[in-house]
View 1 (cartoon, rainbow, N blue to C red):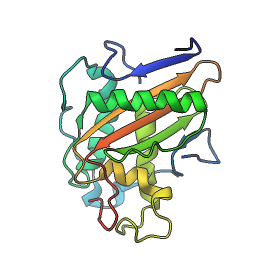
View 2 (cartoon, helix red, strand yellow; view 1 turned 60 degrees about the vertical axis):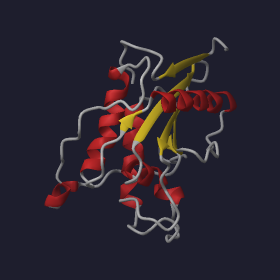
View 3 (cartoon, rainbow, N blue to C red; view 1 turned 180 degrees about the vertical axis):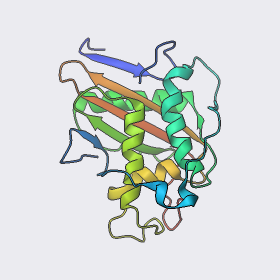
View 4 (cartoon, rainbow, N blue to C red; view 1 turned 30 degrees about the vertical axis):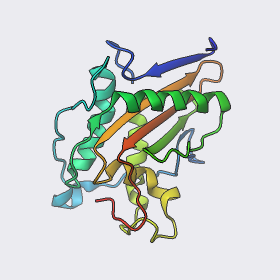
Length: 203
C-alpha cells in the first residue's frame, strides 16, 4: 500500500473518533445536493430522536467512529417513520476498500455491486463520514415524491437520499480513504438490502 494514502476502515480501527459532484462546491456527493429543507414549518416533520446505535455483526468495532454517521441516518429515517439502521462492520470494510480504489483512480463512479446499495461522496479536502451523510440527505429538496423510475430527474438527482431512507434497508457500513498527496477524500456507504428498487417508493 502506498505511503501516500491513508486508509480509514471502520470496524478495524478503534478509540479515535474520525470522522457524484456539485459544481458550486469542492464537496461532492454522487449526485447534486443543494441546501436542506427547513422542516420547522410542518409539525409532522419535527425532529424525532433516533434509536440507539445498534450493531448488526460481531467483530472489532469503534463505536465512536460509527456513531455520528449512523445517528444522522437514523434521525432522518425516524422523521419518515422508517426503522433505524444497524451498523455492519463487513459492509464498512467493503466500503473502505472501494473508497481506496476510488482514491487510486481519482474517478468517482459506482462499483456496480448488486448485493448492496451504494452511496458515494468526494471532497477535495478532509471529509468526515457525517459530512457525506449530510450531503446525501440534502438531496431531499430535489426528490419529487414519485416511485423509483417514474421521474425524469431520477436517481442522478436524489438517489443517494432515497437510498439513505429506503424502508426495507436494515444495515449500513461506511468507509473513507484520503490521498495524502492530493488531499482528496473519498467516502463510500454500503446498504443491505439495497434500495432504489424500480417501481417502488422509498418510504
